Length: 375
Image (cartoon, rainbow, N blue to C red; front, side, top):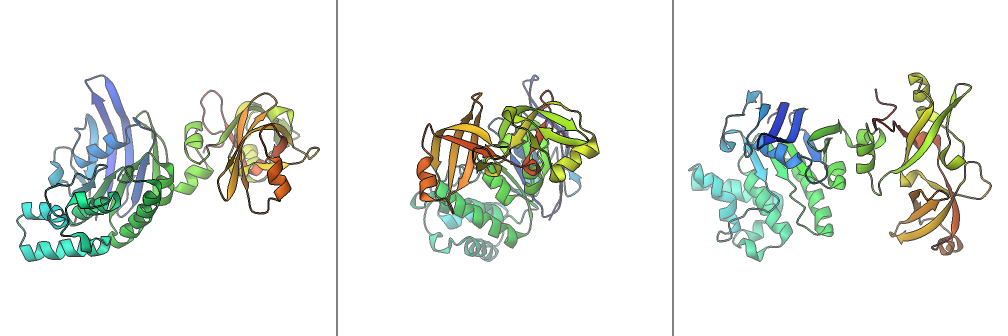
């Protein structure tokens, strides 16, 4: 097993385009770390530099304490699973998995044991005599994972391995990767643009944008305490509602005034604002759709809205609403406990009221877009 350390790693193309900026990260032995971000953010480039498939412009990559910048991929002790499977179409599943072992000139009985053991773990024993064209996308991905497993590598690298699968199969394979991680008990570095994959798979998540690290943390940390506006909007579905408003301080207590409605900032968030002695003024207020609740006219803190779109999602409704100043927000409403007449009233053009509590609020500086509660 192995740790991975990246120190000031940089990637520059054509001496001018910086794809990855001074990437610093310590990955512990047996940790599952996920790189996530939008297309073009540098996550796959960083993974390929770790693998040795991309030259490092500056900085160092260490695996198990050894600097590997100048080592060939085969000498780095890594195994990689690609997005497109990269299987040999003319070979059987068995031969695809055994290919790297035969290059090492291992005895056939050792190869047999390794291949059949990997196939049993992945549930593909019955497909060993088939060729890739006779397999489904999920089965091909298992073969690609099996080929990486038999290498007995220190670090397992996975570059968007589920992106070619349909939604149902992605969910199934996500669960299988979690089980695989438990069985292999090795270091994983996983790249995805899907925040659901990142949240469900990773011990820690590295959120990237334009080649920079925006935040590193556990799934709970990045969801509950986003360091900046980008992370706040990227993590969570639907994305966080962002409201231009002002932070008020009266008699030592903090309030916000979205859409002219004064709301107290209570609980832990209020205490942290006090501890930091946050300055009153204009802010960007963040509230997740699941933390907004329907209210009634006349309720304290009720914000009047106009319903434009009602998306039925099964266990919940996604209400797209507009405030009187045409600010768009999304409200997630559980269908359980919602009376029939309440549901029938939620039609396009209907007037409704929403509110939220101070303990669920997030506060961002309009200029720097940093969280006001950052340590």
